[in-house]
Image 1 (cartoon, rainbow, N blue to C red):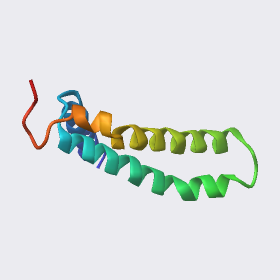
Image 2: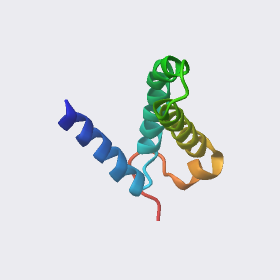
Image 3: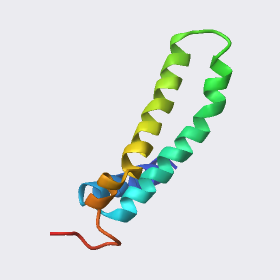
Length: 87
C-alpha cells in the first residue's frame, strides 16, 4: 500500500513540476482529503494542549494553504490544460 501511495504521489509531484493541470487538480484533491482525514485527530487532541495537538493543527494549516494557493487564478493560469505542456 505504501508503494502505491509513493508512486501516485511521485507522479503528482512530477506532474506539478511539469505544470500539468491534472496534477494540480489531484494535488488539490489530496490536500482536501488530507484535511478531512485530520479533523478527527485534531478534535481528539483538543482535550489537552500537547505538542501532538499543535503538530496536527499545523498539518491541517499546511494542507489548507496548499489548497488555497493551487485554487487561485494566478496559480491556475500557470498550469496547462490537460496533458500538454505550455511553452
